[in-house]
Image (cartoon, rainbow, N blue to C red; front, side):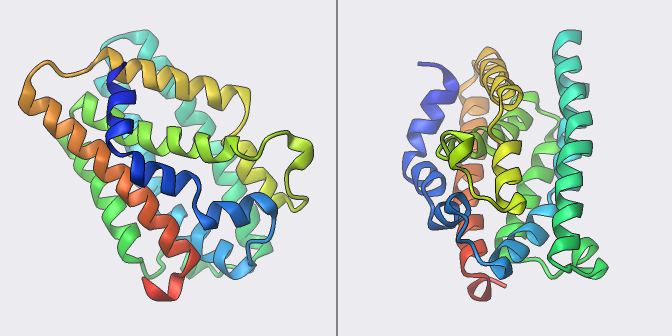
Length: 220
């Protein structure tokens, strides 16, 4: 068992709860109300700055040029495809500019942003990878639940979010990221515990973030 699978198994409760969350259920079947999708996207968009910086730190910290080039390619795609999705949805859902750039942050959003920035400040390649891996792998798993694209919801605001996290390129990226994480498994117990703690906290916050998206009034 690789390091990634080991840490995933240690957080199985939160992991499975996030992947199979009622928010995800409603997104996948197209029944998610616009109000909740709007709240989710506004909060999720606030991670873009820290996530972009994390990818940049991965470029800087990676041990070889081939790894740097993978992160650089993902960074370019993230800045294009995903940002376009957010902007299109914001227009469709009539999200004002203030809510796009400076909304009131929920507790889960603040905590997840802080975790990303702590990993960024650490300049530790394994810690940066831990946060990136959880974010990408867990999203890939819930999106895989959508099955065949012919069964996806009709609304682009639902289907496109699934497609962004369920396509051959994305799946290959997650596999590569998992292998890269396994390859830099820390040998020192103290470092290993620190990376494991970062991984577990990222998984916990993914679950909490979905909780907040489903019932925004309870966490705003």
